Length: 395
Image (cartoon, rainbow, N blue to C red; front, side):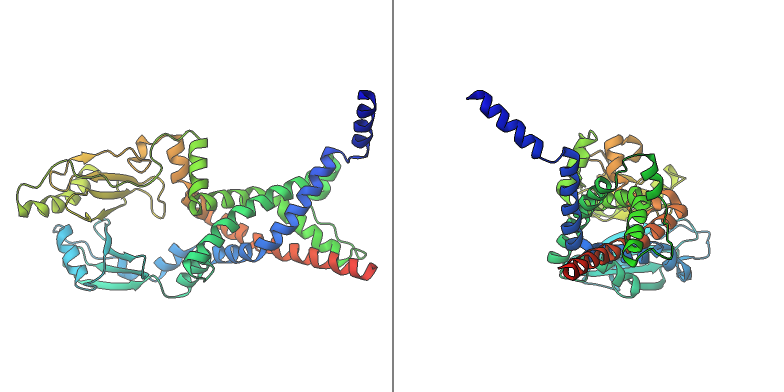
């Protein structure tokens, strides 16, 4: 009886396709169906990514109001800056005030999530004169950013589609690698260049464009997809953080004060002393973004930026709002020099996603890669449509 069972299993195994063949068949189905489902999302994200690649440079091109004449007197105090700016939008919350160098305007950021409100008020750091008011929710760049974040849909729907569309794009990429994986060196060379002749059909031309572009873009697309998933999906963020050895709290934490106020006036005086102190203690700062305490119990926090247009290497410093004593939270968002590999991996996600981590060269790479990535879903749909059309004609 056992011999018959063994012979039956052997016979089944003979008829079963090899593992490599089955793997490619599965990958082909995954690549097709998930690619069709996410194609439009990837196309929109890629094109809006192209539009946003140089958004900082575009905004700065016509922003002469950001520059002021240096004067032989100190900056306005932080509380005075808040008072002046709050007069512009009395009922809106100030996210923070950015103090730059001595020839730069102070930038006061107003931000509220619901209902959406995002404005910046630029002040002369010496006189307090209002130089400009910028609406960051209007204009073409704001339109492109909205598409990149929510596909111009309600946030509760669009943000989910963007986040999971980005993650599934990674699945499509991996399945594409499995399908492409060459048998030998000859096939590898053939897959790295487009060869068209007079006899090459339109279908084969599209397939070659899709394949060759996919091969060359694979590395960049994976980086953009992984960093995009870290930004958009909390569970993916947490998995990556733990995988690379993270031990601290992966979220942003504003600690509470460690002292209590002694009198009413002490609530504001220490705050006004903090920026001058940091300007003296950190002479190589690029800008200091001060965030006013939300309540009497929470600490002040300051983002110390060192590189224009880059955020990963900023210091997040927290101070008791009454004594200005420094507080060290057990979070990845603290002083960058004290960060370990896992902390830096997460903190670099955004700057890597937009290419800013490599300066202008990185932004150019992301610009080109995003544009070419937008071609992949188009060629993918055309291949599927041509094959479907050919099957109908053959029938």
